[in-house]
Length: 108
Image (cartoon, rainbow, N blue to C red):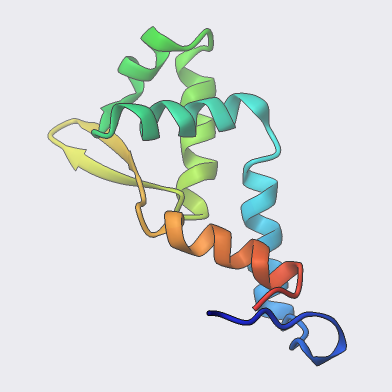
């Protein structure tokens, strides 16, 4: 059984970790960006910007902007294929994001 350490004995976040985690939450602060990420997670395959535009009610430039923000924090991974770029979910986020929430809430 895993014990949970909370309160004063839990290690405080370093400034670097706090900045990293804040960037992650900032990237998720836009509901449409969350929908883009959810779409990529749902289809479980790389998608081009045009494919995302066909499924969500937003313009190509807005999708591109959201994907750039998500890629900057490594929630999605871009892959060049010829003249286009396809995006897929970074599966490492499945482990890192919950760990970040536990660290912020001083749950180890």
